[in-house]
Structure formats: C-alpha cells, structure tokens
Length: 98
Image: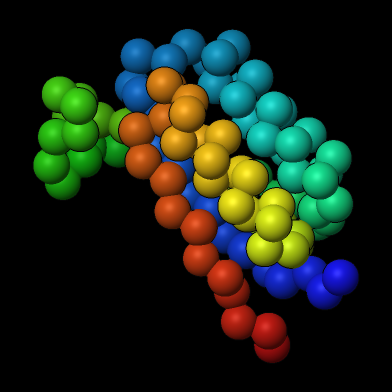
C-alpha cells in the first residue's frame, strides 16, 4: 500500500495539564505507528488565542503532527480525535509529493 505525507494540526483545551498533553501526543504517535504510519514528527506550537470562541474557550494549545501513512490511518485518527473531549478542533491535509 502506498503511503502519503500528511499534516494534522489539532487544538487542545487550554486547561489541559502538561501530563495529559504529553499522554495525548504519545497516544497518537503510538496509534499512527501501530497502524502502519512512519516518519512521525510532532511540534508543539504553543498556547494561542483563538479567532473565535470554541465551546466557550478563548485560548487553545496547538500541536502539529507530520507523518507518512495511508488513507485508512487518517480516517481512524480523525475518528479518534473527534471522540476525544480534550481536543477542540483538528484538521488533516495531504502534503504534496516533491
């Protein structure tokens, strides 16, 4: 199966502790790796002010993940993020092959 490069950005609630933040990052890294993803790179973008309120939150903790995987992994990942109460928003885009 062919692997594409993806970038997923997700926003955590601002009241999430560092321990929970780290456990969420490790969970998704392990989740991608177990489902056949490779080259997982995570960047903490920090706490930022939101342009508009999301569930009565004005701030959020931004995280960015870059990885190579197939479409099924992305579908499972987004479903898992949708069900996680600590994640306010998420977005996955496929990056161009250069």
